[in-house]
Image 1 (cartoon, rainbow over the protein chains, first blue to last red):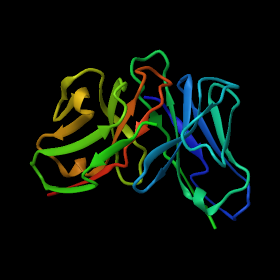
Image 2: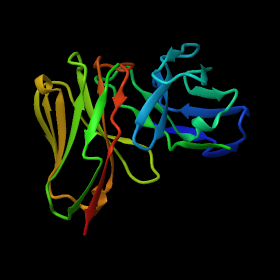
Image 3: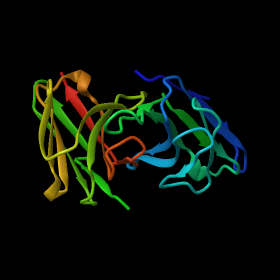
Image 4: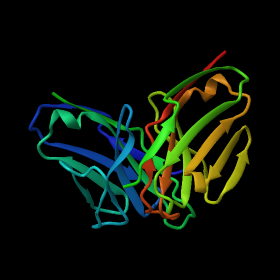
Length: 114
Length: 113
């Protein structure tokens, strides 16, 4: 099973602060994703990537940047954090060689913006 | 933009009961349908998926898909306390990796011993 590791697991920052969430996957999956999870909204896609240097816009991209530096590493950047970005963030990966689109999720990063 | 809705929002059932969870979607071009389960404080984990109309069974879990009705469901036979979790349905237009998955808001299931 794919291993997806996120850091930090918990983060508190102030309004206007900079935050970087990191994600590493170790199964050489092509695709990586960043989702946010809020009560009642399920998981909403922020950005995703199909390889190093590639970035695709998700459904809720405003206020977020992302960068895929290697096959393994995908970063989510909040340059001017706002309280509305308080959420639980999940990174996921999937294998382009498999049928369907099964996502393998990390354990999540909880961000609080005060 | 695809809209995915789940019902009910929460559900409490006794151990051993049959549980039914529902998911509706808005885009008739959808091709891939999946259920994820998320135990409290844990990552979501894929449970089952289906591509074509009909049903698919894996152990105590069965998916029913009716594309014409824009509806699919998850049925859990002989529900166990360990099944208590948040269940998320997900739909995509494409059926391969990279096809954007749109998730529903979730159904929180509690199975009472």
